[in-house]
Length: 422
Image (cartoon, rainbow, N blue to C red):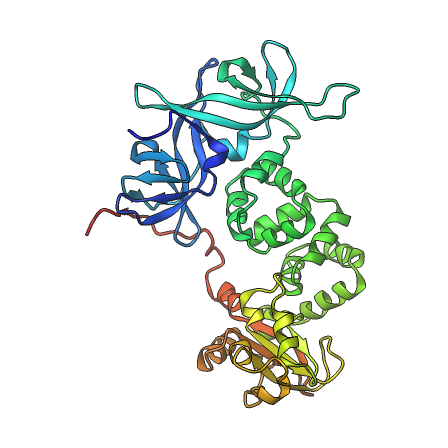
Protein backbone atom coordinates (compact mmCIF):
# COMPACT_ATOMS: atom_id res chain seq x y z
CA UNK A 1 0.00 0.00 0.00
CA UNK A 2 2.62 2.44 -1.15
CA UNK A 3 1.81 6.08 -0.68
CA UNK A 4 -0.29 5.48 2.45
CA UNK A 5 0.66 7.29 5.63
CA UNK A 6 2.27 5.06 8.25
CA UNK A 7 -0.30 6.06 10.85
CA UNK A 8 -3.95 6.92 10.26
CA UNK A 9 -6.18 8.43 12.95
CA UNK A 10 -9.56 6.77 12.77
CA UNK A 11 -11.77 9.75 13.71
CA UNK A 12 -10.37 11.60 10.70
CA UNK A 13 -11.60 8.84 8.39
CA UNK A 14 -15.27 9.51 9.23
CA UNK A 15 -17.07 10.77 6.14
CA UNK A 16 -14.06 10.53 3.81
CA UNK A 17 -14.95 9.66 0.21
CA UNK A 18 -13.94 6.23 -1.12
CA UNK A 19 -12.87 6.10 -4.76
CA UNK A 20 -12.22 3.31 -7.23
CA UNK A 21 -8.98 3.30 -9.29
CA UNK A 22 -10.70 5.32 -12.04
CA UNK A 23 -11.41 8.20 -9.66
CA UNK A 24 -15.14 7.55 -9.36
CA UNK A 25 -16.57 7.86 -5.87
CA UNK A 26 -18.16 4.65 -4.62
CA UNK A 27 -19.11 5.71 -1.10
CA UNK A 28 -18.09 7.31 2.19
CA UNK A 29 -16.36 5.88 5.25
CA UNK A 30 -18.73 5.50 8.21
CA UNK A 31 -16.68 3.37 10.62
CA UNK A 32 -13.71 1.04 11.03
CA UNK A 33 -14.16 -2.65 11.90
CA UNK A 34 -11.59 -4.29 14.16
CA UNK A 35 -11.22 -7.64 15.91
CA UNK A 36 -10.15 -7.73 19.54
CA UNK A 37 -7.36 -10.19 20.33
CA UNK A 38 -6.29 -12.13 23.39
CA UNK A 39 -4.13 -10.57 26.04
CA UNK A 40 -3.23 -6.97 25.37
CA UNK A 41 -2.37 -7.41 21.71
CA UNK A 42 -3.42 -4.53 19.45
CA UNK A 43 -6.70 -5.30 17.64
CA UNK A 44 -6.49 -6.18 13.96
CA UNK A 45 -8.32 -3.83 11.62
CA UNK A 46 -10.50 -5.94 9.33
CA UNK A 47 -11.94 -3.26 7.08
CA UNK A 48 -14.13 -0.22 6.70
CA UNK A 49 -17.86 0.28 6.89
CA UNK A 50 -18.63 2.20 3.71
CA UNK A 51 -21.93 3.82 2.83
CA UNK A 52 -22.81 3.43 -0.85
CA UNK A 53 -25.74 4.37 -3.05
CA UNK A 54 -29.00 4.74 -1.12
CA UNK A 55 -27.48 4.81 2.39
CA UNK A 56 -26.62 1.10 2.32
CA UNK A 57 -23.63 0.20 4.49
CA UNK A 58 -21.26 -2.46 3.21
CA UNK A 59 -18.01 -4.00 4.40
CA UNK A 60 -14.83 -3.07 2.54
CA UNK A 61 -11.98 -5.39 3.63
CA UNK A 62 -8.61 -3.72 4.19
CA UNK A 63 -7.23 -6.11 1.54
CA UNK A 64 -9.30 -4.14 -0.98
CA UNK A 65 -8.03 -0.77 0.24
CA UNK A 66 -5.06 0.28 -1.87
CA UNK A 67 -4.40 3.70 -0.37
CA UNK A 68 -5.40 5.83 2.59
CA UNK A 69 -4.53 9.42 1.77
CA UNK A 70 -5.32 12.77 3.37
CA UNK A 71 -8.90 13.47 2.35
CA UNK A 72 -9.80 10.18 0.63
CA UNK A 73 -9.51 6.41 0.46
CA UNK A 74 -8.75 4.42 -2.71
CA UNK A 75 -10.18 0.90 -3.16
CA UNK A 76 -9.54 -1.80 -5.75
CA UNK A 77 -13.03 -1.12 -7.10
CA UNK A 78 -14.36 -4.61 -6.30
CA UNK A 79 -17.24 -4.16 -3.84
CA UNK A 80 -19.47 -6.71 -2.18
CA UNK A 81 -22.78 -4.87 -1.86
CA UNK A 82 -24.18 -7.20 0.79
CA UNK A 83 -25.30 -5.18 3.79
CA UNK A 84 -22.71 -5.07 6.56
CA UNK A 85 -23.63 -7.19 9.57
CA UNK A 86 -21.39 -6.97 12.60
CA UNK A 87 -20.16 -10.28 14.01
CA UNK A 88 -19.82 -10.97 17.75
CA UNK A 89 -16.01 -10.91 17.54
CA UNK A 90 -15.95 -7.53 15.80
CA UNK A 91 -15.99 -4.02 17.23
CA UNK A 92 -16.82 -0.71 15.56
CA UNK A 93 -13.99 1.65 16.44
CA UNK A 94 -15.91 4.92 16.09
CA UNK A 95 -19.21 3.62 17.37
CA UNK A 96 -18.01 1.53 20.30
CA UNK A 97 -14.47 2.51 21.34
CA UNK A 98 -14.52 6.30 21.14
CA UNK A 99 -15.63 7.88 24.43
CA UNK A 100 -14.70 4.71 26.31
CA UNK A 101 -13.28 5.30 29.79
CA UNK A 102 -9.92 3.54 30.16
CA UNK A 103 -7.14 3.36 32.72
CA UNK A 104 -3.59 4.53 32.02
CA UNK A 105 -1.24 1.75 33.14
CA UNK A 106 1.64 3.87 34.44
CA UNK A 107 -0.37 6.35 36.49
CA UNK A 108 -3.57 4.48 37.22
CA UNK A 109 -5.49 7.59 36.14
CA UNK A 110 -8.71 7.24 34.18
CA UNK A 111 -9.11 8.92 30.81
CA UNK A 112 -11.55 9.09 27.93
CA UNK A 113 -10.66 7.89 24.41
CA UNK A 114 -11.09 10.63 21.81
CA UNK A 115 -9.29 8.97 18.88
CA UNK A 116 -7.31 5.90 17.87
CA UNK A 117 -4.61 5.31 15.29
CA UNK A 118 -4.11 2.35 13.00
CA UNK A 119 -0.86 1.38 11.31
CA UNK A 120 0.07 -1.13 8.62
CA UNK A 121 2.73 -3.59 9.69
CA UNK A 122 5.27 -5.46 7.59
CA UNK A 123 2.85 -8.38 7.47
CA UNK A 124 0.49 -5.96 5.60
CA UNK A 125 -2.01 -6.31 8.45
CA UNK A 126 -3.47 -3.09 9.86
CA UNK A 127 -3.48 -2.87 13.66
CA UNK A 128 -4.89 -0.40 16.17
CA UNK A 129 -1.63 0.63 17.78
CA UNK A 130 -2.25 4.02 19.40
CA UNK A 131 -4.92 5.36 21.73
CA UNK A 132 -5.47 9.10 22.07
CA UNK A 133 -6.94 9.91 25.48
CA UNK A 134 -7.91 12.93 27.52
CA UNK A 135 -7.57 12.75 31.28
CA UNK A 136 -10.37 14.01 33.46
CA UNK A 137 -9.91 17.38 35.20
CA UNK A 138 -7.84 17.16 38.35
CA UNK A 139 -9.45 17.74 41.68
CA UNK A 140 -9.87 21.43 42.50
CA UNK A 141 -8.99 22.32 38.89
CA UNK A 142 -11.58 23.32 36.36
CA UNK A 143 -9.49 23.16 33.22
CA UNK A 144 -9.69 20.13 31.00
CA UNK A 145 -7.28 17.28 31.60
CA UNK A 146 -4.13 16.61 29.63
CA UNK A 147 -4.17 14.66 26.38
CA UNK A 148 -1.86 11.74 25.59
CA UNK A 149 -1.23 9.42 22.65
CA UNK A 150 -0.36 6.06 24.18
CA UNK A 151 0.50 2.62 22.90
CA UNK A 152 -2.37 0.14 22.94
CA UNK A 153 -0.80 -1.88 25.76
CA UNK A 154 -0.39 1.24 27.92
CA UNK A 155 -4.12 1.42 28.60
CA UNK A 156 -6.71 -1.03 29.90
CA UNK A 157 -10.49 -1.08 29.97
CA UNK A 158 -11.49 -2.12 26.47
CA UNK A 159 -12.33 -5.71 27.33
CA UNK A 160 -15.25 -5.09 29.66
CA UNK A 161 -18.54 -3.42 28.81
CA UNK A 162 -18.55 0.10 30.15
CA UNK A 163 -21.61 1.60 31.75
CA UNK A 164 -22.42 5.20 31.04
CA UNK A 165 -20.09 5.53 28.05
CA UNK A 166 -20.23 9.08 26.73
CA UNK A 167 -20.73 10.28 23.16
CA UNK A 168 -18.81 13.56 22.90
CA UNK A 169 -16.08 12.39 20.57
CA UNK A 170 -18.13 10.18 18.27
CA UNK A 171 -20.49 13.12 17.75
CA UNK A 172 -17.51 15.35 16.98
CA UNK A 173 -16.39 12.83 14.36
CA UNK A 174 -19.86 12.86 12.77
CA UNK A 175 -20.62 16.54 13.32
CA UNK A 176 -20.94 17.38 9.62
CA UNK A 177 -23.16 14.41 8.80
CA UNK A 178 -26.65 14.91 7.51
CA UNK A 179 -29.39 13.72 9.83
CA UNK A 180 -30.21 10.81 7.52
CA UNK A 181 -26.59 9.63 7.57
CA UNK A 182 -26.28 9.91 11.35
CA UNK A 183 -29.54 7.95 11.60
CA UNK A 184 -27.90 5.17 9.61
CA UNK A 185 -24.97 5.13 12.02
CA UNK A 186 -27.27 4.90 15.03
CA UNK A 187 -29.31 2.13 13.45
CA UNK A 188 -26.21 -0.06 13.14
CA UNK A 189 -25.13 0.40 16.77
CA UNK A 190 -26.24 -1.54 19.83
CA UNK A 191 -29.33 -0.32 21.73
CA UNK A 192 -27.09 0.75 24.64
CA UNK A 193 -24.86 2.84 22.38
CA UNK A 194 -27.87 4.37 20.58
CA UNK A 195 -29.24 5.46 23.93
CA UNK A 196 -25.94 7.10 24.94
CA UNK A 197 -25.63 9.01 21.67
CA UNK A 198 -29.27 10.08 21.74
CA UNK A 199 -28.74 11.44 25.24
CA UNK A 200 -25.81 13.55 24.01
CA UNK A 201 -27.60 15.07 21.00
CA UNK A 202 -29.46 18.34 21.44
CA UNK A 203 -33.24 18.24 21.01
CA UNK A 204 -33.32 19.68 17.51
CA UNK A 205 -30.60 17.39 16.15
CA UNK A 206 -32.17 14.35 17.78
CA UNK A 207 -35.56 15.25 16.31
CA UNK A 208 -34.04 15.46 12.83
CA UNK A 209 -32.35 12.08 13.29
CA UNK A 210 -35.48 10.41 14.65
CA UNK A 211 -37.40 11.45 11.53
CA UNK A 212 -34.95 9.39 9.46
CA UNK A 213 -35.00 6.21 11.57
CA UNK A 214 -37.23 3.13 11.26
CA UNK A 215 -40.21 3.18 13.60
CA UNK A 216 -38.80 0.49 15.90
CA UNK A 217 -35.65 2.55 16.50
CA UNK A 218 -37.71 5.71 17.02
CA UNK A 219 -39.84 4.08 19.70
CA UNK A 220 -36.79 2.53 21.41
CA UNK A 221 -34.88 5.81 21.57
CA UNK A 222 -37.88 7.84 22.70
CA UNK A 223 -38.58 5.28 25.44
CA UNK A 224 -35.01 5.76 26.70
CA UNK A 225 -35.58 9.48 27.34
CA UNK A 226 -37.27 10.93 30.37
CA UNK A 227 -40.81 11.99 29.52
CA UNK A 228 -40.18 15.74 29.65
CA UNK A 229 -37.26 15.52 27.25
CA UNK A 230 -39.22 13.14 25.00
CA UNK A 231 -41.97 15.76 24.78
CA UNK A 232 -39.40 18.45 23.96
CA UNK A 233 -37.96 16.33 21.14
CA UNK A 234 -41.43 15.65 19.73
CA UNK A 235 -42.05 19.41 19.65
CA UNK A 236 -38.94 19.81 17.48
CA UNK A 237 -40.14 17.21 14.98
CA UNK A 238 -42.42 18.15 12.12
CA UNK A 239 -46.04 17.57 13.23
CA UNK A 240 -46.66 14.75 10.73
CA UNK A 241 -43.53 12.83 11.82
CA UNK A 242 -44.37 13.40 15.48
CA UNK A 243 -47.90 12.11 14.88
CA UNK A 244 -46.58 8.99 13.14
CA UNK A 245 -44.26 8.29 16.08
CA UNK A 246 -46.85 8.94 18.76
CA UNK A 247 -49.25 6.61 16.95
CA UNK A 248 -46.76 3.77 17.59
CA UNK A 249 -46.70 4.34 21.36
CA UNK A 250 -48.98 2.83 24.00
CA UNK A 251 -52.07 5.01 24.47
CA UNK A 252 -51.24 6.12 28.01
CA UNK A 253 -47.65 7.02 27.04
CA UNK A 254 -48.85 8.95 24.00
CA UNK A 255 -51.37 10.92 26.04
CA UNK A 256 -48.81 11.75 28.72
CA UNK A 257 -46.38 13.09 26.12
CA UNK A 258 -49.08 15.11 24.37
CA UNK A 259 -50.02 16.65 27.71
CA UNK A 260 -46.40 17.69 28.32
CA UNK A 261 -46.00 19.26 24.88
CA UNK A 262 -46.74 22.92 24.24
CA UNK A 263 -50.51 23.23 23.64
CA UNK A 264 -50.16 24.59 20.09
CA UNK A 265 -47.73 21.84 19.09
CA UNK A 266 -49.87 19.15 20.71
CA UNK A 267 -53.00 20.47 18.99
CA UNK A 268 -51.42 20.04 15.54
CA UNK A 269 -50.36 16.50 16.37
CA UNK A 270 -53.76 15.56 17.82
CA UNK A 271 -55.48 16.82 14.69
CA UNK A 272 -53.20 14.76 12.44
CA UNK A 273 -53.86 11.68 14.56
CA UNK A 274 -57.56 11.86 13.67
CA UNK A 275 -56.82 10.92 10.04
CA UNK A 276 -56.18 7.43 8.72
CA UNK A 277 -52.49 6.71 8.21
CA UNK A 278 -52.51 6.10 4.44
CA UNK A 279 -54.59 9.13 3.47
CA UNK A 280 -53.75 12.69 2.48
CA UNK A 281 -54.69 13.82 5.99
CA UNK A 282 -52.43 11.22 7.56
CA UNK A 283 -49.54 12.12 5.25
CA UNK A 284 -49.73 15.91 5.38
CA UNK A 285 -47.77 18.39 7.43
CA UNK A 286 -49.77 21.14 9.08
CA UNK A 287 -46.94 23.67 8.70
CA UNK A 288 -46.45 24.58 5.03
CA UNK A 289 -45.43 28.11 4.02
CA UNK A 290 -48.66 30.13 4.20
CA UNK A 291 -48.88 33.78 3.14
CA UNK A 292 -51.68 36.41 3.04
CA UNK A 293 -53.06 37.80 -0.24
CA UNK A 294 -51.10 41.05 0.12
CA UNK A 295 -47.70 39.31 0.37
CA UNK A 296 -45.07 40.22 -2.20
CA UNK A 297 -42.67 37.99 -4.11
CA UNK A 298 -39.92 39.30 -1.83
CA UNK A 299 -41.94 38.12 1.21
CA UNK A 300 -42.36 34.68 -0.31
CA UNK A 301 -38.67 34.26 -1.11
CA UNK A 302 -37.72 35.40 2.38
CA UNK A 303 -39.94 32.72 3.91
CA UNK A 304 -38.61 29.84 1.79
CA UNK A 305 -35.01 30.72 2.68
CA UNK A 306 -35.67 29.14 6.08
CA UNK A 307 -32.99 26.44 6.37
CA UNK A 308 -35.33 24.23 8.41
CA UNK A 309 -37.70 23.77 5.45
CA UNK A 310 -37.32 20.61 3.41
CA UNK A 311 -36.73 21.18 -0.32
CA UNK A 312 -40.24 19.91 -1.10
CA UNK A 313 -41.90 22.33 1.35
CA UNK A 314 -39.74 25.22 0.15
CA UNK A 315 -40.76 24.66 -3.47
CA UNK A 316 -44.27 26.03 -2.98
CA UNK A 317 -46.14 28.68 -1.00
CA UNK A 318 -49.86 28.68 -0.17
CA UNK A 319 -51.91 31.89 -0.18
CA UNK A 320 -54.98 32.01 2.05
CA UNK A 321 -57.39 34.37 3.75
CA UNK A 322 -56.86 34.83 7.51
CA UNK A 323 -56.36 33.04 9.78
CA UNK A 324 -53.03 31.85 8.41
CA UNK A 325 -52.64 28.95 10.85
CA UNK A 326 -54.10 25.65 9.66
CA UNK A 327 -56.98 25.20 9.24
CA UNK A 328 -56.80 28.57 7.51
CA UNK A 329 -59.36 30.87 6.02
CA UNK A 330 -60.35 30.32 2.40
CA UNK A 331 -57.56 28.92 0.25
CA UNK A 332 -56.72 31.16 -2.74
CA UNK A 333 -53.97 29.33 -4.65
CA UNK A 334 -50.39 28.13 -4.76
CA UNK A 335 -47.24 29.94 -5.79
CA UNK A 336 -44.43 27.97 -7.42
CA UNK A 337 -41.06 29.28 -6.27
CA UNK A 338 -39.57 28.66 -9.70
CA UNK A 339 -42.16 31.03 -11.16
CA UNK A 340 -41.71 33.60 -8.39
CA UNK A 341 -37.97 33.76 -9.06
CA UNK A 342 -38.77 35.22 -12.47
CA UNK A 343 -40.98 37.99 -11.08
CA UNK A 344 -40.04 41.44 -9.69
CA UNK A 345 -39.63 41.35 -5.88
CA UNK A 346 -42.33 44.01 -5.47
CA UNK A 347 -44.95 42.00 -7.41
CA UNK A 348 -47.86 40.67 -5.37
CA UNK A 349 -47.79 36.91 -5.05
CA UNK A 350 -51.56 36.82 -5.62
CA UNK A 351 -50.97 38.10 -9.16
CA UNK A 352 -48.96 35.03 -10.19
CA UNK A 353 -50.78 32.25 -8.33
CA UNK A 354 -51.80 28.93 -9.78
CA UNK A 355 -55.53 28.81 -9.01
CA UNK A 356 -56.56 26.12 -11.48
CA UNK A 357 -55.67 23.06 -9.41
CA UNK A 358 -58.19 21.51 -7.07
CA UNK A 359 -56.52 20.49 -3.83
CA UNK A 360 -56.54 17.05 -2.28
CA UNK A 361 -59.13 16.02 0.29
CA UNK A 362 -57.96 14.66 3.66
CA UNK A 363 -59.56 11.24 3.03
CA UNK A 364 -57.92 10.79 -0.40
CA UNK A 365 -55.98 7.52 -0.53
CA UNK A 366 -52.22 7.20 -0.79
CA UNK A 367 -52.61 6.04 -4.39
CA UNK A 368 -54.79 9.07 -5.20
CA UNK A 369 -52.19 11.39 -3.69
CA UNK A 370 -49.36 9.79 -5.68
CA UNK A 371 -51.40 10.02 -8.88
CA UNK A 372 -52.17 13.70 -8.21
CA UNK A 373 -48.49 14.59 -7.74
CA UNK A 374 -47.45 12.61 -10.82
CA UNK A 375 -50.22 14.04 -13.02
CA UNK A 376 -49.37 17.66 -12.29
CA UNK A 377 -45.58 17.19 -11.86
CA UNK A 378 -45.65 18.49 -8.30
CA UNK A 379 -43.41 17.88 -5.29
CA UNK A 380 -46.12 19.08 -2.88
CA UNK A 381 -49.86 19.60 -2.91
CA UNK A 382 -52.45 21.38 -0.71
CA UNK A 383 -54.98 19.45 1.35
CA UNK A 384 -58.35 21.23 1.70
CA UNK A 385 -61.49 20.59 3.70
CA UNK A 386 -65.05 20.79 2.32
CA UNK A 387 -65.18 24.52 3.09
CA UNK A 388 -62.10 25.26 1.01
CA UNK A 389 -59.76 25.86 3.96
CA UNK A 390 -56.13 24.74 3.85
CA UNK A 391 -55.49 21.90 6.30
CA UNK A 392 -51.90 21.20 5.34
CA UNK A 393 -49.69 20.01 2.50
CA UNK A 394 -48.50 16.60 1.34
CA UNK A 395 -44.91 16.38 0.08
CA UNK A 396 -43.48 13.80 -2.28
CA UNK A 397 -40.95 12.53 0.26
CA UNK A 398 -43.73 11.50 2.65
CA UNK A 399 -45.57 9.79 -0.21
CA UNK A 400 -42.46 7.82 -1.15
CA UNK A 401 -41.86 6.89 2.48
CA UNK A 402 -45.29 5.25 2.59
CA UNK A 403 -45.19 3.71 -0.88
CA UNK A 404 -41.91 1.92 -0.21
CA UNK A 405 -41.85 -1.24 1.93
CA UNK A 406 -41.77 -0.68 5.68
CA UNK A 407 -38.16 -1.89 5.80
CA UNK A 408 -36.94 0.12 2.81
CA UNK A 409 -34.17 1.70 4.88
CA UNK A 410 -32.74 -1.76 5.52
CA UNK A 411 -33.61 -3.58 2.29
CA UNK A 412 -30.62 -4.51 0.16
CA UNK A 413 -29.84 -6.62 -2.87
CA UNK A 414 -26.75 -8.73 -2.29
CA UNK A 415 -24.30 -8.57 -5.17
CA UNK A 416 -20.68 -7.89 -5.94
CA UNK A 417 -19.80 -5.09 -8.31
CA UNK A 418 -16.40 -4.58 -9.92
CA UNK A 419 -16.02 -0.85 -10.53
CA UNK A 420 -13.05 -1.58 -12.78
CA UNK A 421 -15.22 -3.50 -15.21
CA UNK A 422 -15.98 -1.69 -18.50
